[in-house]
Length: 255
Image 1 (cartoon, rainbow, N blue to C red):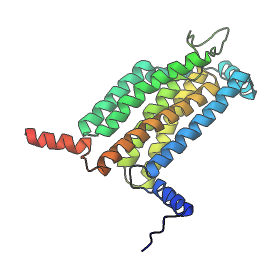
Image 2: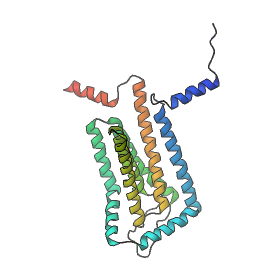
Image 3: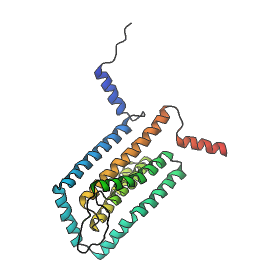
Image 4: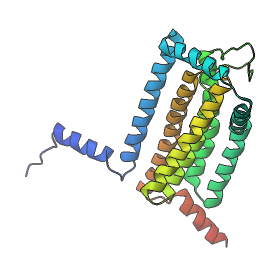
């Protein structure tokens, strides 16, 4: 009795079926994650190249920065300062710690791992990128905000993208109904957009700075979520209990 080995076409179909299957340690979640990482990374690279070479985006940057500066209003300025300080290094760190504590109290150990990796890691990545590109910040005769650090990409916007994106990922998995999930995603996008607007309005960043930061944050968050999700699925595929199940078993044993 002869055994026919699978053809190349059959192997390709099996490979694609496994990559788009919702189940399995290397299934659809990994495929979506890699696609998001590659897409965000590619667009970030194109945008960074345009900024370095002084392409059209830099002209738009300068025009938009002047437009915001010329239309500054005292009341709106105070609102923008509140948003930008709320989502600064201190504010983002506090919110990150509170979110991590929430995951810990809920027993969401994999989400906790994402939080302690994505939030501080994203901040360090942003600092590294700033020193790679060393772009000067917008300059005005009477600036609303003066900073001595580099401009590209925006640290506030990147941190907001990681934090609110992580929160949205968690809530989308917990709420029921398409309308609520859409509302969660729109809320996260709105918060990131507000932070980006505050940075441009206050003259701390150009448009390309905040766009690059969104792409940077999305790519880094995708890396962290995809890696932790794959780790979780690998443990389950090998018959090992998840960290949450193991923690509950230890709690029952110690009771």
